[in-house]
Image 1: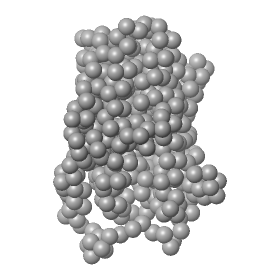
Image 2: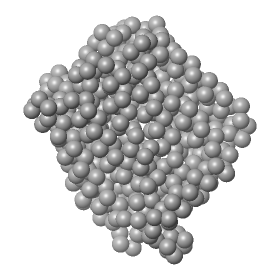
Image 3: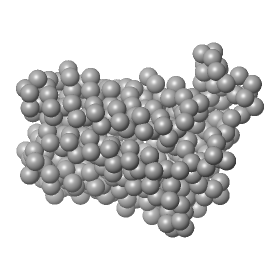
Image 4: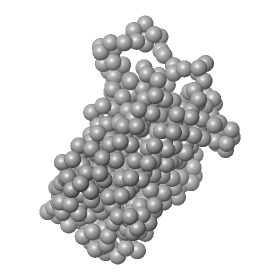
Length: 410
């Protein structure tokens, strides 16, 4: 990994761009949720607007994956970065004009997320164009590390900036992060001898609406026919439907209503999620040769759920920090195991579409979960919700262990 990072200029540029832009995304998410709570005082409205940031992947994910295979990926990434930078900039401008409301926040959030839905598959697909084939695993791991580092840096930066600049001005930071990402992507130099791969079928018929549907259908059919992948997608959807609403919108509500603290404490606890995930990476390395990926995913879900239950009794900031830190340690068991199973059980020419289906399962069910949690939180104390969803997520992992084919999948 060290050789690829320090020698490969393109990979270095992409990595730095992702760290900076995704740290900006963390600023945006924190500012969005807290601003909504302050503007509306409604967990339901906050949940619905937050949900709008997840819907585009569900609606456009597979189409975006096909597009990334048929246009210049670098130009697609640059175009979406320009759009996101401008869209984010609209929010503080409207706020200071006194014209910002929850509806506009929802529309802008949906638009930004739509751009991201097209950026992400292009980014993932461009990696084979900038690194040698034998370095792909290391390069992918490095890009994954950029996300975890950004999720750690973003909340820590937000915790500091909130004290000095306030919530709304965090949007300026996110807009600037996309400008930096755009600049670094512009500096990428793609080898003309290393174009994106085109399969024989695609070569015979590269265009046409029916061809797009055919390519999408091919990926869906493979997922249905492959028992391990089908089980993986189903339990992924269920786990995210049960758990992610509490993790996303439940955390700021917990900080505000149970702890009685402000946005800085919320940002600090968000940083604990990222810190725990970074700490959990060595655990994955320790377990990868000691259990199958199927078992690692299932046990990750069980522990991921059980470690939310103590929030039923915790009412101090220190207790919440420790609980979330321990909880997040087990998240890489799920995410790393899931990616490896797809890579092992899906042919290379179908992996992009299966990863898109996986993203749709994660993001789509997260959107529903956020909305449901927001509604429930208006009627049920959030600490009871955490206990309930923790139990449900643990049961989801236990169900996965009942399937022998999944248990033994590696």
